[in-house]
Length: 459
Picture 1 (spheres, helix red, strand yellow):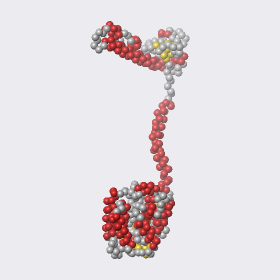
Picture 2 (tube, helix red, strand yellow):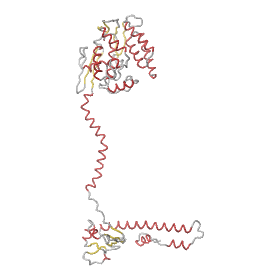
Picture 3 (spheres, helix red, strand yellow):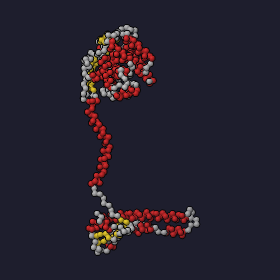
Picture 4 (cartoon, helix red, strand yellow):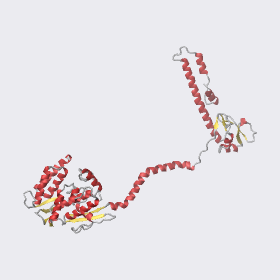
């Protein structure tokens, strides 16, 4: 990518400086990083020079064997710097090479060939590093990693570059064993943990810092190896210990005399499996909270209706006499005439008992004594005393009646106004004023009824 070219050139410049200083491992690391960011002919040429120097046993471009005391970051030290001597020696076939802490270690030609094959791959060619196909299953990836990790572990393989090859294999396994990272890598072709290659995703292992090896935000190769094989590492040196199970995994490791020590606690997903149901239950409860609140408010709003007595409907009536509504009544307030069904009115749950208590009933002529001894005029009409239930009912009758009269009165007044304007015209020229006066004096029956009832003032 063009956007990575500047960073690639910077890494290439650092690689040249290390190469000139005789620091071949660091030169190779930065050269491979430059090629991974943006492949250039200069990076390829420099990498060939580094490989030639390593194969020929040279620790500097002049080919002179020398011992350099330098400062480098241990791949598992999370950025902590250690100073230790590193000796580069010529080795071919069966031979020895400088190990961790300056110890010489033996290696075979087969081990050296494995190192050369892995280091010949680009840092992001994870399938090629593990020698698996792109469509392989997870079991094949684990099997390939187990084989290469055992062959390349620094405590077993003393070939030059075995440490770097071991890091590449560990990185490839970290990416391809994580379904999310593997999906990102398959789609982008770059390192999922790099800001250039893709977005970092969660892993089965706790996140740690790892510097000087490209494993930013992940466990180191030694920690990964220890966690994968679980325990003492098959005789790969003291200090390996790990536990797997339902709880957290406690890890400790040490490599070389005083070179690297690390103790950490890892919480795997298996250890968190017990908390998953509780988290799912809490999440579901939070999602259902709005519905539960709505249901609770509905119940609370319905409580008054549940515990209260339902309202009793008022008796039906009419302002005109019919066969059904034959009982003539007059309100005690305005004296409005209305008609009810005597049977239904007398049997009303509220009005009926109130009339019966006073010894009254409803007949065709309105309210009358049950024995028929009291005159009608004394019980019906304007100003007559009513019980509270009947008085409330008749107030509703009067409101309905006067409202209808108001509507009819307004319509009649509007009609008279339109007739007058039509007769007078725009300027009143040729107007029959007698006709206009007749229109103005024409009474409106509904308005007159309102005046009779005393609801509307006379003009």
